[in-house]
Length: 129
Length: 145
Image (tube, each protein chain N blue to C red):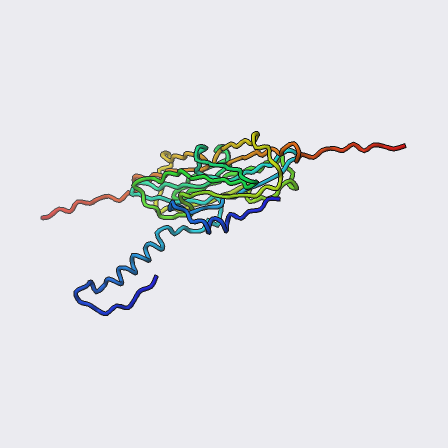
């Protein structure tokens, strides 16, 4: 259904910016008429997210804008400024005009409604005789 | 990194190769980060008067986060709630964990608990922990006789 090639891709394509590329942790679930992608993008403002859907490849790019306290020395580090990047290949037709994306508390929620032809259709069974 | 063995030349800095090695090693470790084994990932920043703790807790409502300080120990507790409206079989992939978390850090000094500040923005928590006045180093003037 959804495949990821990002981990490899992130290493193959070298970035011009000197920021580490991080794959954000992502949940994907499917409902009858939509696919929902939820990604952790801590420190990212809504205007720093770029989402593209091209030939069924959905790509999320974002840059964390965390400010590090000035005049302090970093004594322990587990995360830092990063470039988030991840892409997925969608097998379903998506209604591109109705895609919505929202950021809240550093989490991106992307709703991809399925195109009408990809939605399940109920076929009435007729009794004979 | 390859270090060619050069003929020794006294007109050059005898420690030149060593300096180069030193510089390369520094660069190698410059952006070293400890792997975040636990949730949430944290950073610690220190100055003479305070420690600043930053933590990555995306998707957590600030109401569900609790910062407590006892003496020199800071504890971060909270809960990341999952979307209960989605049945488990509808997930294609699930990487974002949910549930309760707790992490503690022991600081090298006691904290002025009344002056602790915590701010949450875009999934990042920043806690400023000022050092207790009585534990700050005092400069002692030396009188000459």
